[in-house]
Length: 473
Image 1 (cartoon, rainbow, N blue to C red):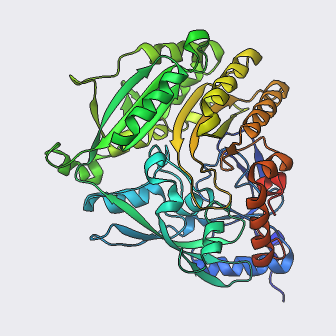
Image 2: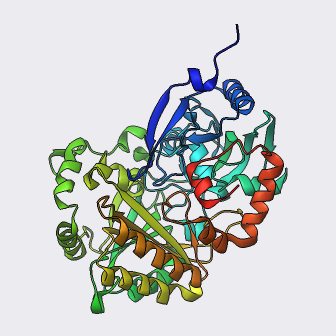
């Protein structure tokens, strides 16, 4: 008797992007080790079933969706394989999360070099999307922290990659959107720290230009810098916001900080202003509309944050790094239609004028982002990465399914603006680009990636809704 096929045996699941605006029904598998994963690949290859990968599902758009294909959930492979207490080098399986990494490293005086705004992403996802953090200007993206990785290819072969061993493929796999195979092991470096907290200094900036100037002034003496923008403000206040600078503390600066390296001292509080964190999204939902967000942003801009004589205060690493984890299920505040995040990366030479015009166009169209996050970046070596010598602005737009045209027209207009300025985009968050726009942004780098994919995955087994939309390969 023949064994059942994937299409007859694997369960179907409806999965969504983190923004909740895109969903897809696909077959589902959750292997527990590399051998089971290789078996899944063999069956998918024999049956012609396209395969995509999914970790914690934190990509905002369709990067982990695979309509009608097979979604392989790698969270069943979630071990921290080793941690070197002398060097801070960790080896992890692809389903291990940022949280798993910091919990393994922090008690020994090490913190992950790069983290996003949530501790939920998996190592496989961090590699595939080349995530970045609030210190990208200083240490680069996640890929710059990766020393070595194992890649399971479509034909079942396992390759070990590094900058010294098959460097071209290494540079394609990182930021490669999971389209070249499955990362089954990643070796990554972490940062030695002497305290379980950082010193945070908030700086109010009355205009976008002032925020640029603040970054330029403070980058040489900062470990982290991130800007929040009030996107509703216009006129002379266009781009106003608050910059948060954070710096590591030495043992001499923070004698009590050593005790805070204990994991239990890093956990987020169970409630916010007396409200259980699990319920806060319901309160946020009351304000998740244009008038509510305009009021919220105005209050946030004017509300004092400082607690120290110099305007600074102390936060644990977790409190500062993972703002998105304070409110579980916060995305539900956007309602059933969800939201998209639109993040653009613009070269330093054109950024000031381009980002100012971008914000002004949003205001003129009456489609204003509810959140604006501003960062400085540096170039990196990975083919499909977003890294450049410039700046990024991430915008959250609510989706209105009854009339999606205003948002679609706006993002199309903004994309042309960014492309004209020599900009790039972040595929992990993208929901709006088409294949021609993506090709204009990445040019020869995209062609080199496609050539590598044709060699490594000639049957085109690894696919996703995003890959098909952008014609990546």
